[in-house]
Length: 361
Image (tube, rainbow, N blue to C red; front, side, top):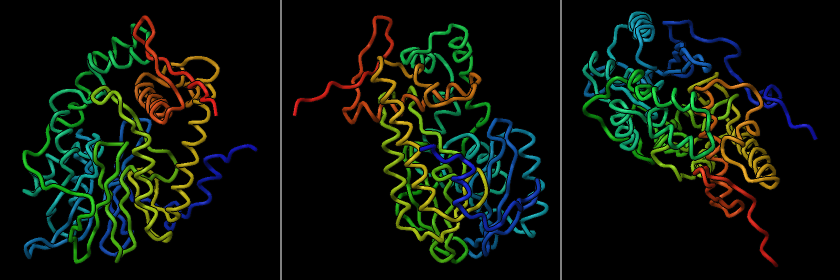
């Protein structure tokens, strides 16, 4: 049977706002006291959704910001337009960041300094971002090149380019606020008279925090649940034997108790309903990819580089290949940790994965 296309899967979801989206520098209300901002990114994934939540702290009326965009002049300019057009003359009182990836935390330092407010984030992602803003976090540098080499990337030019990219993360996140307030799984944050429950998620980022408001029936899902694309789930050089895909799939189960009518506010794409349907789609997607990886490794020992064309049929540039390598390792590791694959190291240091021998019954 032919698997459904992305368009067919997306048709099973509902977009309450249709094709309507906020204009650059503007905000659109999507629920009482909740505004949607959409900012441009200079990547293949060309936008990020940010959120304004009406709030009051210590008797002062204002807004809580959720996520920030990368630090570049164009992003700051869009924020300046938002300050003028969408804040209703009120200040920003708090900055919440769902996780440490550049498009989410890049401008947190600027917003917190500009509005004299505090950053709220998980401790794991705060410290990862602090380290990353002074070095690399797996997107470049010698350690990343060595990691990719052990998983089958042998092209000297590609490895040289990766070594040169040691400043990738700090170029987008030049600083992180010196102080923060910790967000924890299960914690309820009072925002504008509503309780927002923190739901931790793993596999995409070290300790991603989504926010759910039962009163409003709204989930700010960050990158954990996206309506059209599948979340990037990768293994990086800092934790080279992580089982990221298992962590991600287990994390999805934490959203199943939420009502199917929940309005999901994702970091990419449009607000939608159909949370349970989307979770099932994501799980089916990875089940299918794992089966394909298993078939490939049953035919011959495979490196992660060998698995990239199994998982990705389109042409990829080097930037995309770095993410694809992480995804390939994540799929191989799930099968390896579950005992379905074995791992051996070739004479050149490359890890090769093969189907585990059948155990006699």
